[in-house]
Length: 159
Length: 139
Image (cartoon, rainbow over all chains, first blue to last red; front, side, top):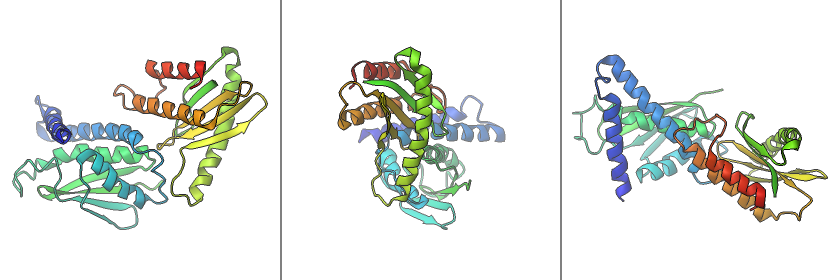
């Protein structure tokens, strides 16, 4: 049980450290911070992909892989599943989480809309890293309309 | 008892390759290289067949008069190739599987090492020790 809290607290500190010490000032500082966080998530995603259930990853379609991400990856990292998955069947997938664990501790609603992207960058990287380790190149972005609900958009790069 | 163990990356270059005794190293390198074709064939064949659960263990790739070659593929398409001596009593299938499982566990540990960049050659001592133990005494 305590694992989730530990991870949330650690993640909060990681975000603060990425932006701390004057590095986070200005637009460039903001962009660097997001890049650093996303890169971290990417490397973690690669390692996580190796630890996932062996042999349970025979997916004939990308959609199955994404569904697996929604269920098992989210379950392993956040102890819950994503609430909604939409696709246009042409390589774009939207994962929606109405109660994203990293955002639940902040005031619900619109108050912290500007700060929210910092807390989503790591998870974007995580998704991208796991997909890349499974052989799918993609780009992942996140958007928040109202805390704590958020959407992750995964766009698969065609070779 | 394994005589050669190799870890091949997704792009088919070696991440780790070690063989004993040292004088036949080139021959084993060549064997591993030729076995990659067989690995690719098996992987693509399995992809087409409608199996629900794909085995990571590929089994015997091909036998020659001196030795046998076994293969294993991980989730991220990293391949393990093991060459075993045919002369001693044939290792049972379970033993080969358990050797590959140990390899996979060690490889996962290497992957999760923050100082290791995916795609580099593997220099981990823990991995080396595990491979040595497999070559010296089998499983």
